[in-house]
Length: 348
Image 1 (cartoon, rainbow, N blue to C red):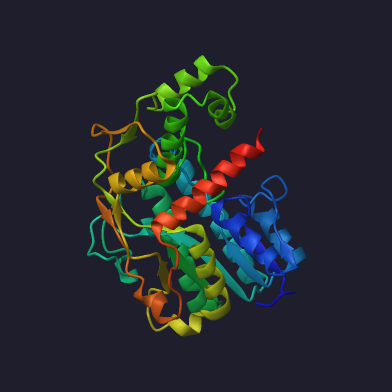
Image 2: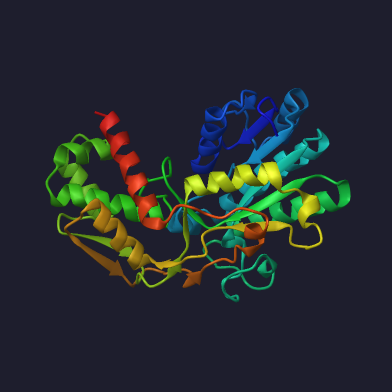
């Protein structure tokens, strides 16, 4: 992949896709293709194939996905399976038909069983039962990963799959009703700080609500009061988080340096990408609380589900190929907080 290669980014508005696009633009790549959902519906097989036939991208980053938090995944299980299956199938098959040189398929460590040996190796996929809440999304991602593997085997394509641990950073989904655990905790604590310190002007700007009483009622429903915030579960589950800049470095490194030929001896041609370091949800919350300087309490609602208790991955495979993370958790939280404040200030 060079500066004038024709590159398509599927899902360019999301956390990862937007960061890929930003990186490529900032580094002088000038032949980039990206389409909004309105311009190209990835669920429409014919539209996707026509797009590939016309544009013939040489390199494809597949970052499109239907994602969401715990409650949304419970309530919309069919959507999470169908939407992800259709989008990835259409893009991967058209990449093969129209002879893309290389595809990077971006996935998640939710593909691994709920109960398995730790740290989780790539070989753990399909060796046990999936975590129930994530099951529809995980099944779709397993299918996409195996599709890459089988197309490589049958058609000699160069489709590489990366399995990411939990990502955080700028441009994440901070919507309290649909966000993943890290941005949800972060925003709850930040809004709790504003309420606790009676900084009502910034609170209303953040919420995009004009009436303070309406804002208070919404926050109460989200478990945020002027004295404490409430988080789901016991706080004991442990998770591994990686900052978005490290993810982008891994993605670009893999597109440039890792090919099917390098890993085809192993039937599991996907690669884990993470830090290999885990923190409890409570530890994460307390680190955010300290950095944000929130003076209120954090309460854990043990009546709500915890999900998988531990999920840390083995990254030795991608380490052996030349990539390793650089940004530690506290530095990542500080950078995300700085970005978030700038975004809110820009809304004034």
